[in-house]
Image (cartoon, rainbow, N blue to C red):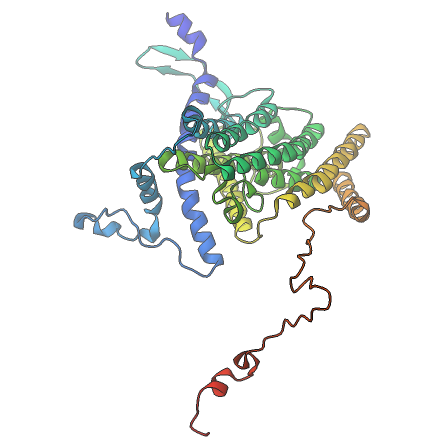
Length: 448
């Protein structure tokens, strides 16, 4: 029995299990405070205060010193509110799919992170598990949930599964707005999955490996890929926002058009699961972007601080901290984008995908393939190729087909399309509206 356990309980298995358990809880806590961060960022942009009252005193005099706390208790209050609200199921919904859809959304969102090597390689010493009396042989292990050779392929496959829960929720709700939101999410996912895969393929072409740790090692030796492949980085970030239904790509839940979109009929914790999935997806996507283009745990571009030699426990903790800091910065940047750029129309989102992002991604793959074939993988030739791609795209864009959708349709008899012989006067006729000094012109003053 002990021999079987010693062959089964390897150092990599134990580290992977601990990493999964820790990161899942960190992401769940990060989701709660991502909502708090988004509220504070939106308040700052809109010149408001945001959450600043709810602390952790729970109304108890003994905990009065925890009152306020910059509003950090707001996330806990929101969670309690979701738990205590009525979980209402509308009539004539597909009850099985209606309850299954939020689960289908949240599970893939909490599975994508396991291929990310948060702490690089750790040279773990040999140790003994006291309760089992099993000796685990040490050695170099990857601080990741799964050190697999097809990590990037796994991430792409998992990212595509979340939209099924959105589509199922819209279909099962028996609501026209929800159904339209699900259709929009499906079409958007299909459109932006293509450039997302091509952007990741650009990195794989240059690095020559699907293993995430090899991508980090390549950047440690050659600099962050964001500087040598900025076009791929921008395309991946755009696709990341679209895949997570983040503004300006949040047409699947456009309040002005679809009330709430695919989650219109949801309440209580089933409603909360959709938000949990969205922010979990955003955190995981930001971590993948950090791994692919921002050097992972290297804090300074073109400067190798940790390298492959730093495999001690303190170095692993420092790497995890730097990786998490970059991920949090990207999450905050996505929130700034949400409260800065207005939502695009649905036809504009599709036009951007098929007339701009996808052609540019295909041009990028062809160009990088030629560069790799010629052996030109360095920073300068790759950056020059990216600049050339942008110039070509700008020169070709005027000749791309233009959409004819959403043109103004003349409404016969309106002031914009008057009837024959009708004189249209759109200027005001009320004397008050024509008065340059409305107060002085309408009220008696002392000098009159």
